Image (cartoon, rainbow, N blue to C red; front, side, top):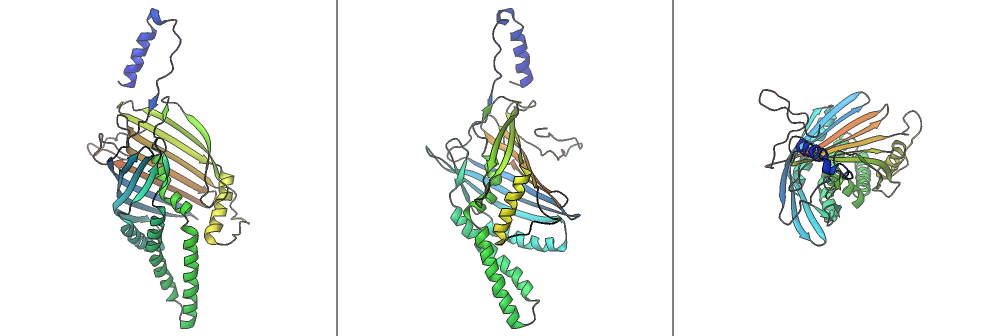
Length: 356
């Protein structure tokens, strides 16, 4: 039943004298039903874009792939949800020559990791509970990343003419690289990098709330290096599409405390660099604005995610602004959906703007 039809029916009931003295009824709730069971397999068209403006210079990149999500195990203890991707692309849309050179390495990394499974553990309610094969993934990422870094080192060594000085610099650079990889490829940090969008994708399963209402919670994002957490305010809502009652929109946004984010980010940077960083003078980082917003379109009868889009905007006042967008669209789904910025091919008419 469409929402406007339901509203009309309620008006007719309330206008009936026999019900005039009845207490007002609570608004019906909507629920995101759990879609997972053994053998469920979904495929998505996926796109990642990043736009960065730093010191007046703009760079833009775009990556695409086909993402597969399947349930490999289902039991009373929960689920194992396996993610993998294939047919990855990476392009620099705007930026300096150095960024174009990095694109070659990025494409090689994407190709090497194509098809590598990420085994996500889900609780019985379908919410994220961790990564099962994290050690295997870390070893694979290191095996792929280390040779790429060594190539970059060799290109720098070629500029040193003296053989002894070159060999000494090579040994130092390799030791520094190994140490940097040790600091970066910790389980908590790798898990945070790999699963940010997955945790959003799986974060609202089973939610049952009144539609078209805004809910707010104070939360804290764990620091992958064990330092101070990131205090944040999460606001979310659920609504049924006025055009199709089988579409459920789940929207959220999250604001991270800017001053505490700056402190935590500095601590993380020092961990990665392996040394104390100077945070004084005109370039001192005292405030870091991080804001997330997202929209998920769910097929109500099955609970399957048909579309997902999240955007993170990071701003360092006066120095940096970076916008990262990740979006997924179900292939061969129950309905055809369009991104907000797309237009239909016929007659150039605006497409169905999801959630707007």
